[in-house]
Image (cartoon, rainbow, N blue to C red):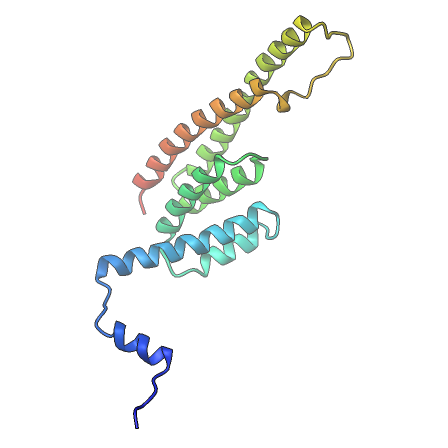
Length: 181
């Protein structure tokens, strides 16, 4: 009588000669680390965990500080493209700078200040442009206060500022990569 094999036995037979090489193992481990960092970062950004919990979870991960920091910077760069408040993102950036050392935390604070300064400068120009546009449409008055953030002009200016910031952040990342370990 023939033996009936389970699906697991069949799968094991078919894959018994498949082996990962070192490069594949490293890539698999890096992706696993990136997924864990993304989850921790998401919980921090959404306010589910605070600074101390974030640092404890990062400290408990089996990877080098430098590797975790550089991956986090990449994730922050990705996250910066998404709309929304950036304050928690800047807090995370500062934490990464503190962990990396070498004055990078101060650089992170200066990046945040530069970003906000650029955004305020753009906001004034955008508000003026919106008021002119409304005036041409016959809408004016002393109490008129447009919600600038809903206008295309603001979205364009915010995107431009975001692109500029991403360039600054990439320079900061390069500095972090070259900082002594």
